Structures are given as structure tokens and as C-alpha cells.
Image (cartoon, rainbow, N blue to C red; front, side):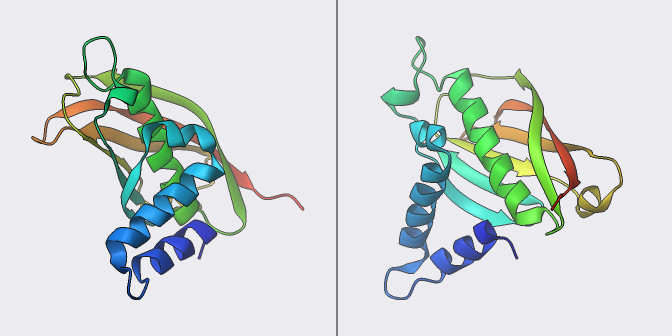
Length: 159
């Protein structure tokens, strides 16, 4: 099991503190590993192989000139969800790196946004190094505000 998945499971099982505090601690720790993620203050909700979900709180620090969540903040959340998914899903003998992102903004991000990243299990064992991760951002009312694909390059680890 990956370090990210192990830490996630431990954080959700913290005695006395409970899963809500554990998730907050995990989210802070994850954001320190890639400090740019901290700009959106992600709150991870779920991490497991082939799926990760986090919440971007709607606050002034992520607003654009319209008072909605900025497009780049949305992309940052999608990439953070993808990174957690990749770490939780990749076989131990492989490595990954993002190689591109294609997104469409489909509605105004007028609330907290839930960012979801998903793959299929067989994608991680394929001989094709190009691995598309499906991503989307959803408003509180269920409206998809951003959707797309983040492409990873997955190769065997070299010694």
C-alpha cells in the first residue's frame, strides 16, 4: 500500500480525535508535500485506489473578479485529487508524472467545490504508458462546473 493511502487510513482511524480531525490533519500534510496545493486549502473527503475526492472551500482567497471560485483554483483542486488517486492506485513497480490537462468550464463555481478524480483498475496495469484520469468539479447543488482529463505518463521504475 502506498504511503499516501497508508497515511489516509491512519488519519481516518485516529483514536480520540476521530475521522473529521484526521482528515483535516491529512489534508494539511498533503498540502505541505506540494505547497501550491495549500493555496486552495483542500479538504480530502475520500481516497482509495482509482478514486479521490476533496473539497475546495469557497472563500475570498480563491475568488475571481466575479466572486466565484477561480478557474485555476479549480484546476489546482483537480490536480490535487488526481495526485492522491495516483499515489493510492499505482503499482509499486511504476512511477507517474502528469503530462497534460484538458478541462472545460461548464458553469459558475458559486459554492464550495467537490473535486473528483477517477480511473479504472486495468488502466494501471496496461502496457500503454498514457493514462487518462477523469476529473470533475461539482457545486453543492450537483452542477458540474469543470470536467476533463488529466493525462499521466506511467512507466516502470528504474533502479
